Length: 438
Image 1 (cartoon, one colour):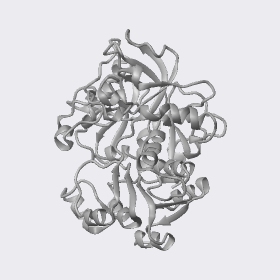
Image 2 (spheres, helix red, strand yellow):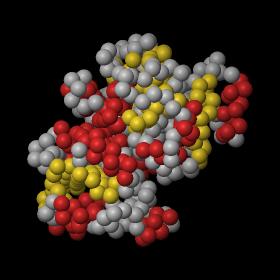
Image 3 (cartoon, helix red, strand yellow):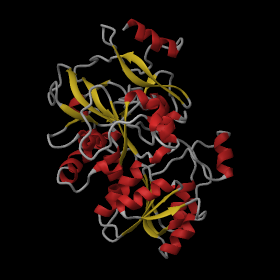
Image 4 (tube, one colour):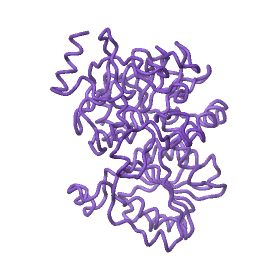
């Protein structure tokens, strides 16, 4: 064990063993596999100390399933502020309760649970309304307070900008205030169905509900990563009569057409997306939803501005939505934006009377029970449709690079640990990233 700890120290150089501010290692020096950020495009699976109980409300989980999210790529590229070398990443995970603090009441050792990607206190004004992502008390980032005027909840594995909490791309993870931030998983729900309740399912559902997709609407969705794939399905379940999806990756567009029966636009084929949408829907769509990314600018102007740090984010998708939506239409932004942008078409927003909605980080607590009991358990929404691969945690560093390049049609991945159950029937079996095609 000492040798493993030294290996991690060698990775970090002169940095502390684990940088995450909430971290307390077990006294016996035992270690685990974890995915750590070491710099831009440099993530590594390392041997890290296993966390221990820090506060009475803590739970330590043995992670049985974790995954990679599109927003993790912002960390991978070093685009999120306040990352530090050695931070353990990952905000979507589930597991089996291994240890409980003396104040924990709702879960027991050995119980199967999924964690919310955000860490909420359970007692502030927002938490009492189940708006857990807006918690006042779990994020100490003075930088976020300066940039936004207030702070969101703390998040697992998403830099010190969101509180510096160690993440769940690891074999063990500490969950603070566990009674409020863990959801017990009932028998009959597989791990593959449960894992994505941590983020992608409530996030995509929130985008559709918060923006307001109504019966008979025509909806356009930008970005066909896992969030966009789920948003398209939720929009259909909420009564949209047409869903049009936009991306540059033809495999993802084909995947969406096959799985959801949507109309597709490849923006490498149609350079003027708004014009194409007006050809398909004269007058514009009712609802436009941004499920894409800010780290891949389309135009030379924004590539230069971003490269010179004259802006942190690009407005190209939002501007396309403003042009594509009908007068008095609705635009929702669930894509992760972090800072400032130039060239935003504020005139279209005002003159067309558009409702532009920043959906914010999804309040997971608000939707957990509804998604689980009204959609997953009755079979109305099966999240396993989006799982394309299953890999061992040893391959997490390679998975980041493959996911960034959209290699082998990768959409959502189930990452297993030594504690994982066998794959559920009909779900992908374990493979190694090196075995994938290009």
